[in-house]
Length: 118
Image (cartoon, rainbow, N blue to C red; front, side, top):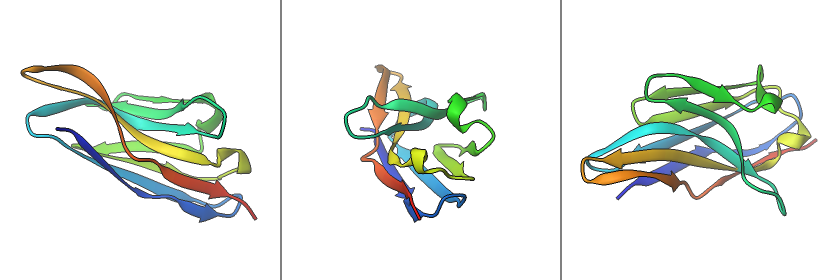
């Protein structure tokens, strides 16, 4: 089965930086797209950034120029710079993955809290 293991997150002051990492594993699976979503209480989970296996990236408008997503095989990293209080959320690692005998499906990490506050 697929596992997504996240690391990083925590408390940071406005203007500060954090790095989130997510390592994906799953025997025989190809991870087509990996990325990060975030969610605040009472709101839907929304895309922050994603990257394909070919390196194509996509960012939410609210984080363009501040966040950078990168990928090394099946590990995806999100560098968060110039953080704002409105970036406070639970960040979830995401992967769309499939195998020879498995149709592509969406998988999620357990979530990691990012809090931006003075």
